[in-house]
Image 1 (cartoon, rainbow over the protein chains, first blue to last red):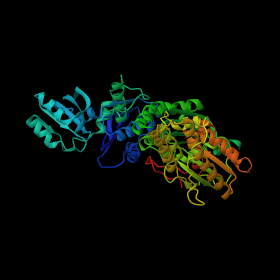
Image 2: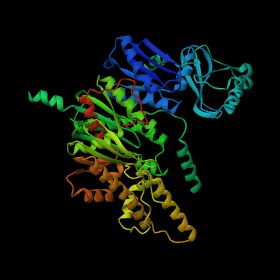
Image 3: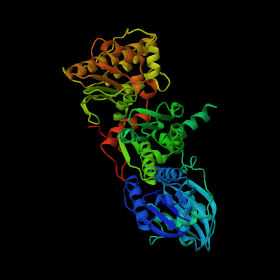
Image 4: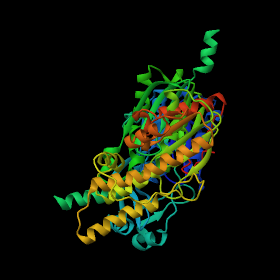
Length: 232
Length: 342
């Protein structure tokens, strides 16, 4: 199976091509640049490297969020339009689950997170175990203090992993002490090669209906709903 | 031989437009013939917020984009393989909204080895008219919408010279703000036009012509005059005659638009005058322009209503000119919210 996989959820952009079910090419760029400028040239580069043509793809995989709204839309629009245009299946994976999967062959709790500003994070809780991953707590938008207190209350060692810049290093060690650690050494960056491999056995999704999981309402919508509740 | 001729002149362009709150796709043949024109409007969604919320618009575009493209191809009876190029609005507009169209266009074109053409939104509004009747140069175009009030002079296809533009609010923006002050539902422009048919120009708001010989516009002074008048009336406890306010405001806007456009058309000796953009749907503007130009030998072109508001057909029409110049975008085409037309 040939798969094109894309993750532009946050500052790191990762794209890969799985050729005959094996990773053939992967590119991860972690600099402040515009994904809208970089993504198609990067995909073109991968096709050139692998000698594949777009019409030889069997599937497209996309990291569907949470993350930067703009980043998510660039990746998702590209992925779904290409999948629709080539009439091939599309599959999506939580951007947090993808990041947690970097530790797929460990055996522990993993809490991937992205900075969501003003002390908030997008996060969730996963358990990895010798090649399998299960969700323990759903992806959500929460303040980091509450989340770390929750993790502490579990009384179990947790590995935290974040692909975005954040200022939570000291808070993590204060709150969790020796019950947790922040993963580094470039293992905290998303890898589209992993996304493509995980996508092989994932179920197809409806291409038209597929949209990013923002995990946060637009402010105007939230206010409007609040007003509706007050009125009723 | 006829076959070769037609393949050169009758290129098929799939066009995409997502610059504001309409997700649109269309198929246009040879820049003049409309094969399909699909517009998924979000107007009802933004109504409850009293205006377009950019993030909400962007989120809806991504949910509509492939369906709208599919419908446009289906209605044209075509597959993507039969398309010669994919055109898209690259700007100006809301950046998050533009990004959806631009990335969809690039992905689709790349997957099928088709060229991509980036189109200026205003060029699209002007070229909407070419779907009705071919251009005769030189021509003048008045572009009036929520974001634009510009007089654009053209001597040939694809060459635009802005000879006048608004120095503050766009005409459509003034309509929206006055409508809001009057407590009218969104979008305010059509509502003001409707009320203006009933009322009288009793308030005689100022007409802003700026300095002698200028083709520029200014509507913020008028907007402020209307809002001040409303405050004043409320303070006095006097009743506000909404119809008369609407008529007086609209009379002021349209007097200036008609006078300046007429002067520019005469000064530049144009053969055609094109009215384009969302505000060209305004009945009074259409009537007054027709009246002013009827005794001239200038051919007045106003697009039918469905081509006045944002659509992708116009983007396909404008793209045809660029197609023949082989003016294709590269893979790093980006949304450009502040794109200039010149």
